[in-house]
Length: 432
Image 1: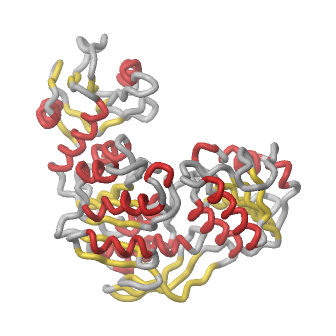
Image 2: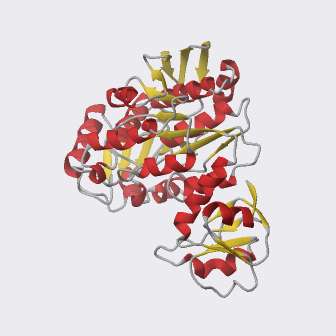
Image 3: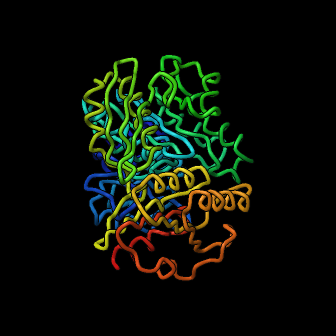
């Protein structure tokens, strides 16, 4: 979004220092800042003010500042009390200047993939912007709003949760009119006292919707469906039951779903290029949102046909040997682990392996990991644990060596919480 520095300063109660300039968008990372953007130095483990010079070398037009710095004399800045808070305030101000229709997406499982599929379905007929990767927190969400082109018609914003009140704070900035909740599962339970706390925290999205808005809720998840009682907005449900219904679901040799979708706007056949039966649920949510925004059903379905999702989410690579590697290493909890295990079991394979790392931030980590181990055993999947003994099996010091020689008919799932960094194992397998 293009804006004058003076306008921005007035909107957030900051003080303009230096000549007035126009900027287009914002970044808090000098490695990705683009020409003409606002640089926002975040004070965390490192003081972002140290990188102001690098930001200007990369093309920044101005910067926020919360303390004296050597660049004030040479560059325009907006002085604020706290740069992180000012970033949120500036995005909220920009939101008041925009006519974009905003969709908020949250859930314990599938929110990033659902965000990606919503973006694909809506872009069939609307100028659509969605946050990159998992830019779903107090830094990523406001940057997404500020970087949206001025002609954006649909703005799709993923909203993460790491405690009570976080989604409320994001909604105060984004003011979504459509809110999507995918699932309530055992994710971040340590932070909110268990799964009922997760439901309460996720519910903040539908509670924030205006009466003129729409809550898009998973009819197959009882905790999500119950959120209908906590919103003044209209409710549209999706799943194997509900307003947007999946039926006749089949999976191909790579567990890519094909199914029929019945909606208030008609019926259609859907075929996805991403793996996992759970992706059909994500696609149903995307179709529900697109329909709510007036996108033609056939156009939305056609856009989903070749849609891709963000990296490290059921990302399939076939090796020269014929083995299939599933990189789902971006995040993990018991619910998503179960969905990923089900996906590889549905694939055409003779041997199935799961290289699993730690699932972080669980209120009962021992039981959560053992539950996944029991499920893997019941499904006939060989579990290789790395970096943790919580699964109840001996850790593999070298997971790639533990897999042995892989060939045609072998499927390997690699999955853990982000902190485990298991994408390195995927890289080693692919590079050979």
